Image (cartoon, rainbow, N blue to C red; front, side):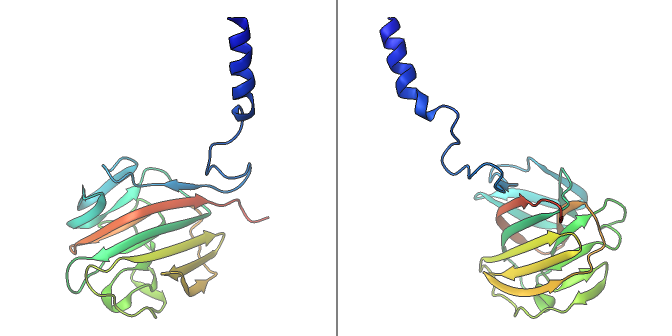
Length: 198
């Protein structure tokens, strides 16, 4: 019996204390999925908005409000894939959003999903960085990658840099999805937290 235990320990020894495959190196930034494809765990609906899960996608159905993460983020990379389901679509991703305001946060920073201003950066209702991304067809999946670090934010659309901006003045807040009575699907929502700038 003792010999069998020693053999098991010797065989298992090399695997003990080692990171699981895909875990990355110690100290390396890691991606965190913030949508599980099953329900709205980790998210909070704010004001009059209807979001649900269908076919493993996060569906914005209707309403004038927003869906926010349960926790706040400061420095991060946020990636999401989206597709518009109706003509003249309009929504957006809120960055470092606060809770004051209705139907959306006051003076919130937003990466626009409005068909006619796609990918523009908006503060409240004012365009700060004009959109240069052409309108996307309905039901086409598009990937947005937003990197937020200190006062700097960048947007990549399907792997291509769209713009950079370095006067972001919100220090921390929620990641959110705007509801503006237009239907969308979202998937592969994930965040990688970044260390503060030295």
